[in-house]
Image 1 (cartoon, one colour):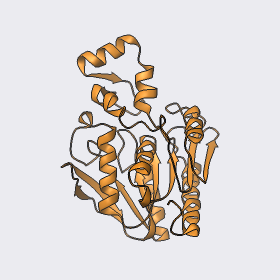
Image 2 (cartoon, helix red, strand yellow):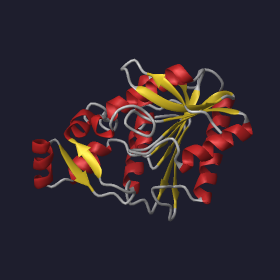
Image 3 (tube, one colour):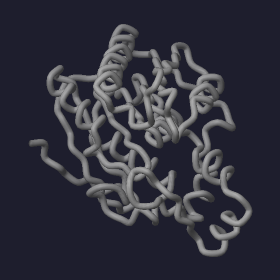
Length: 258
C-alpha cells in the first residue's frame, strides 16, 4: 500500500502526499474543491503510473484530506501555494499536470507561476475563476449580503454536507483569476469536459479554450459524462489523453515551453 508522507510548506502548512518513483516527465494530480487524494481519478492514475513506470504525485491541499488546517480557512491562493511547494519539493524535472475541477484552475495558476517545470497539461472539467463567475455571480442580493455580514454562507452539495463558502474564499479568489488577462500555455494541453456536467457548464470549457494561447490545445467533449468523470470509459480516456500529452512532450524535447 502506498505510504502517506508529509511536506512542510514555506507558509508553515503540513501537506499530505503519496509519491511514486518513476521516469520523467512525471505526473502531478491536482484535485478538486473539498476533494482529496484518495479520489477515484487520482488513485486510478497512480495505478496506471505504477504499471507504466512513470513518476506520479498526488497530495491534499491544506484543509483537505489528511493535510493540516481547516477547509474554511483556505482559499485559492493558499491551495496554489501548496501546489507550487509540492511541485518544487517533491518532483524533479518536467511534469504533466492533471487538474480536476478546481485542480484545473490550480494547474493554470501553475502555468503562470512555474512554466518551465510544466511539460504538458490535462484538465478534467476545469473550473477556472469559479469563485467569481459561478459562486459570486450566482448569489442573489440576500445571499451576498449574508456572506458579507456573517463571513460565510452554506451551499447545498450533492456530494455530502453543504459547502461552507467564506467571504475570504470569494475575495481572495479575485487575486487568482485567470480568464481576465492573457493566459499562455506553451506546451501540449488537453481539456476534457462532460456534456452532462451539472457543476461546470461546457461553456466554461469553450471560454477557456478561446481565451488561452498555446501551440497545441484541444478540447474533448464527452457526451453524457458528468462532473465526476469517473466511469470506466472516462478513466480510460484520461489515461489515453495523459499518454498522448506525454508522447508529445517527449517528442518535442527540451525547449517546447520556452
